[in-house]
Length: 236
Image 1 (tube, rainbow, N blue to C red):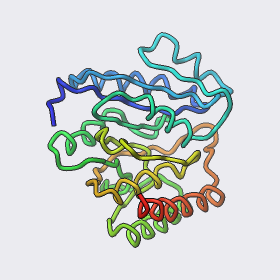
Image 2: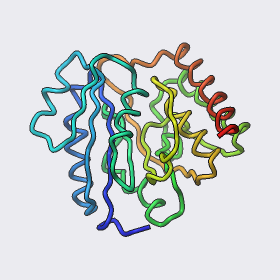
Image 3: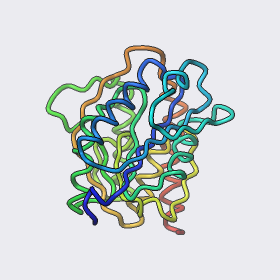
Image 4: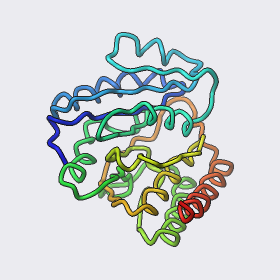
């Protein structure tokens, strides 16, 4: 793989009603990428926000795409990935739960050619995690199912903080419109023989607003996406 000075990195950020945090996330990400010395593009896909998310992003050096109606995180992420031109593609949530300053941890295994997809795991840190108990219980079920279907042990299959080589996305058809996008991408990546690794990252539970995640409805969608992705990958 080429050195970072010769590569373009695409950072894709789906946004829905994240005015209190998204501008700061972008600014911190820019500072991090400037320190690393990457050429980069930051792709924002606004999922028809009803707050000031678009307003606070004015005058930021980003590529902004706005959906005409609210479609869901998965749809917005797919739209952004479809626009990414980089040889490395990173995804990060816009609610401030991920620290842009930790992106080098995700990039290191890619640059050393030790992985094709790197997941930032909330559960590898040696300190208590702030995710809700119900969410943690559901995640354990998802992780176990992924292990059964792919024989890969993953501690945080639902993390939206990721970095990957662009070849992982080539020829991959993603269909998810909601939070199940992370599971679908992971299962299809593993099924196609790509190397997936995890690195520890910090996680801050949102302290404002309301998460759009429904533990029951979205949980069922995630379970279905894991099984469906595996079945479709077998017929790839």
